[in-house]
Length: 445
Image (cartoon, rainbow, N blue to C red; front, side, top):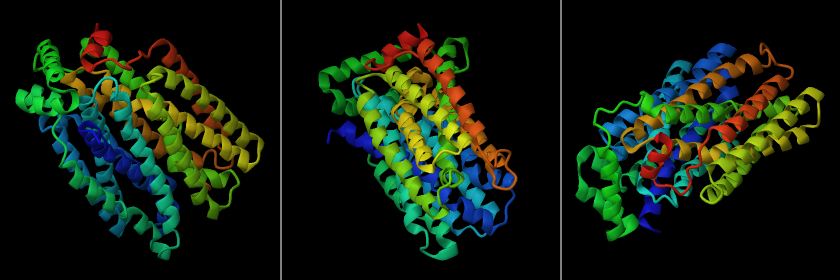
């Protein structure tokens, strides 16, 4: 395996922990609610969405350690946060400590969604950047699948303590990731920008490009860095376009309903008419489809481009969400409804899932990339947290607004995906096959 591929795969393992950590809660959702007799509001805020508020904090502030201490050190401490969160959540004696450790894990998730795509985008070639950054998303959905599968296998393992094992098993991959990430080098662009370490940057890039091409690449990066001053600010008119692009792609990612379905999959499937004991098993099918079609998206992102995948995903979203809403409204068979939920998952995996982290990591210049990544991922996680917080209010079996039939929720998501289609058509630029330095010229002008 080439050095850059090895580094990319190692750092992308942060995505595996991201996916596992965010979805493993689906297995503990109902047991924890019953154990501590929680109200819908308390359950939504302190149990289901607390990790996401940590993710908001981690994503909004993740650019600070990335920029100040480096991508590598930030990635290492992310592993520590995941490890502490897994053990702490599993051993929590009350909902308050549980929510605290979930919050800690969320900080790790948010920071990883800044640091990992930023790092990978900065060590790869333009021709392979989409594919290698998308490894983060591939590992993310692999983590989701393994979390669903792990929850299913651990059901009945120790009765009322099953959920503790579900939460705690994440400590194993978290420890392995933390050890492995110490073997990767620092980002060459960060070394040039912050450390003025041309020799160190050359040593890293030489393993990617070869000696002659490496010197040209270093000269190109230095030229780009020299164009702006060291006190450059992200929130200025100069960066208006990438700020808007990152905000919108992150916003539409969440109002597709993807986290709504992933986090509450067992509960949604029960409402669809599937037996409670089958809901965790059927959740695995969601994880399998997500993984397969993410693999497809990763394979196509550098061939077809980011915009083409977004077009494909948007049409798939609209068709599947409208049909799911109709299935709930008309009382159609659970098998048909599950089929279109799986089509929705496939559409997400090929489109938004494959594109979002790649696109956000590309549209900002070198000097503000870490902070720009924080802006885009922060937007993503703010809306993810809001949707997860509010879901019990709409979905709760006793007090939910749509407790009997959630079809209006899916209709709303379908409408938002029509707006995403318009965004892709009229606003989103194509970024495939263009160097990061050339993209700055294209987007900023």
